[in-house]
Image (cartoon, rainbow, N blue to C red; front, side):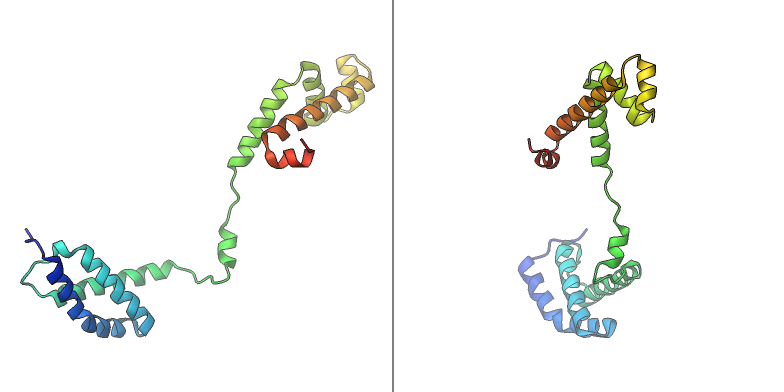
Length: 175
C-alpha cells in the first residue's frame, strides 16, 4: 500500500519536473500549443493521483508514463473527432425533438374529447375521414348548414382550447 504523500513536497517535486515534461511533450506533439496542453493534462492527472505515487520511486518516470498514456489517449480520441469550425457537420446531425409534437398531439386529442358529441362527430367525419359536407349531412340526418356550423364551432373551440395551453399560440389568437 502506498504511504501518504506530503502535498507541499509533492508540489515542489512536480514543479521541478516541468521543464523535462515540456521537452518530452514537444517531441511527442511536435508543436508548442499541443505540448503545453499535454503538460497541463499530465500535471492535473499527476496531482489528482498523487496518493498513488510511491515515495522513493522515480517521479520523472511516473510523470512520463502519465504523459505518454495521456498523449496516446488523446490520439485515439482525435481519430473520432471531426473538424467542424463553421458547424456545418453538426447541423446535419441535429434531429428535431419529438416530445413537443407528442404533447401537442395528446393535447389535441384531449381537446377533441371535450367537444360536444355532435361537433366532435362532424369534425372527425369532415377533417379526419374526408367526407364532404353533403355526405356528412346525409349520414347525420341534418342540413348542410348545421354540419358547417358544427364543424366551425368545433374548430373554434379547439383553437381556443389549444391557444390557452400554448403561450405562443395564445399571442397569435390574441387571448
